[in-house]
Amino acid sequence: MKRALPDANTVKAAIDRVLDQAAASGRRPTVTAVEQSLGIPHATFHRHYSDLIDTHFRPRVPAPAPPTVPGEKAGERSEANLKRLRQENTDLRRTLALYEESFAVGARHAACGGGRTAADAPCRDG
Image (tube, rainbow, N blue to C red; front, side, top):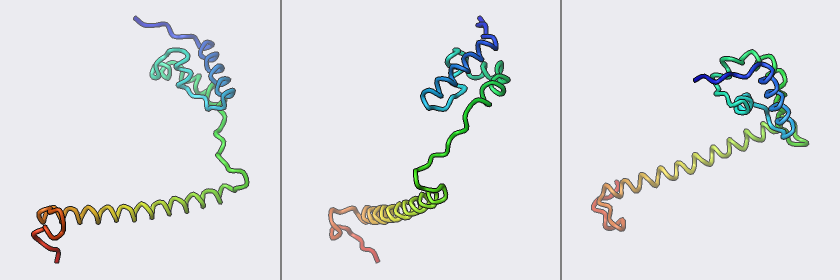
């Protein structure tokens, strides 16, 4: 049994409600919130109301504000972030190299008999 879909005015009212709620809470409005408020599946909503999304919803969604820290310019912030990320990358590569070396030593030890100490191992490196 097919359920009757709401008319355009009901959908516009739901869009207005979602936009108002988003503005009041400081969050970004979503089409998903409109769909949920109407109880309509995503595909059905887009199939029947894509024109309202384009004409009534999207033009009224505010553009996202770029996050900024007071006193910093955008270029300075991104350079500082890149420097931090490069340092983290270097640190992670060093840690990875240590783990690889440890794993290789353990694998050689196991291949040589896996004694409790190096003196128990039947073979030697070299």
